[in-house]
Image (cartoon, rainbow, N blue to C red; front, side, top):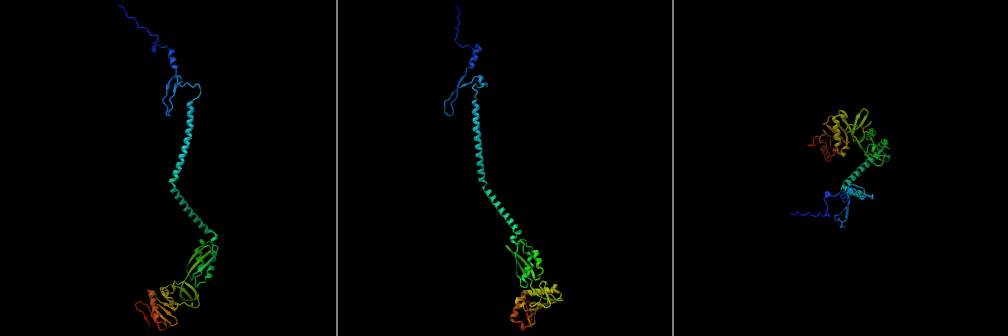
Length: 331
């Protein structure tokens, strides 16, 4: 029996990897492999790039000495810094615009308050300047309201205020100057810029003369002595009361006299009272008496007396009794 002949060996067939020599493997590895890149986004055709050999991929330097990737990164970095700076500047500008737009009302309110406070400050400073400035100093004193007093004498007494700024005129100094005039009951000061000081005086109303050791003293309803003369002051009645000017009888006499109408007041020549309940008046040259009683209802009694005197004049009457407002007795 014949054996089968062995299969022929193909000399051209590749040997197994194990059978390849080291030289063959190194030659294959050194050969660059070309690969096809995917299409670009801008539509340009893809290019074939050489995949570097393992030695180049492992970090071998480029023989040409030019680092293309580093140059591109530097360009990108420079462009990015300028764009970021411009964007930040635009953002800050837009933010300032928005802040101004949303705070316009607040800024207007702040400006208004600043204006008001500035005006007040100017007003205060102006007032202080006027108070201490000689531009508003007193150069003229005018006295108003005097009848018995000599206005020129009062103005001369107040001459010490000349040269004093109007806001700094002292009422206490004016009062001290007017004390020497007993007829002055009250006064008010009025400044008339730039240089005039007006003094309005209310004089005391004398009600009669009270006899004393020194003569006859003219007094007002409060018992303040106005003047003393040897004889009774003309045009004023003589007062005779028990207890002097500080008594209740004197107070009642003063109340009655001030309640009389002016036409009857000028006819009274004497007043007397021992108590506050028996005030008696004497009218004119006829010596007609008016029995008044106390000072209660003096206004009504004055009206009744005026009507009674109109109906029956004093020259034909010895007395009018108005001590009771319900019944009037004429004798």
